[in-house]
Image 1 (cartoon, rainbow, N blue to C red):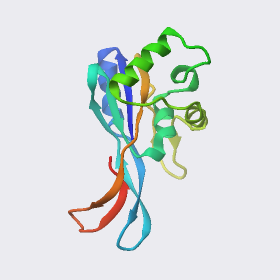
Image 2: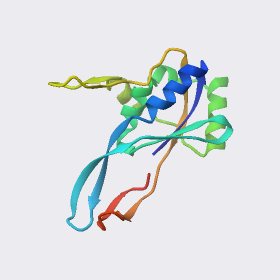
Image 3: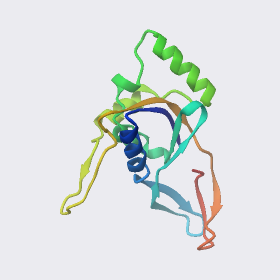
Length: 164
């Protein structure tokens, strides 16, 4: 899945945000075609520049609520109300230009229930969020990836998976 957004703020803080975003990992589910068993592996989120100065974050589709929560996107600052405002019109135009679709309120509600950061039990480690002072993330929309068969060149195994 691709999350399209505008990233703005204090340059040094934005650069820090980009570095931290590239260190995020998510579970990637796939089906081993040889054994017909479902597998999960860790997949690094991928950040890349996109059209008109926007950014794309690529990650497994099941992780969308976690990605939104980690970025601090809530229904209030990322979703839309009942009336069409000038901001919503601008975002609808940006979605059309970027070829993405609007994120539903249901997904934002799910993200609101997901913790921004996680402290691992019985460990000194934790997973931090991407909420950084001096940085604003304006969510534009999402684009789904296709699913299909892919052979891992290092193992020769074939998987049915999301093409990230």
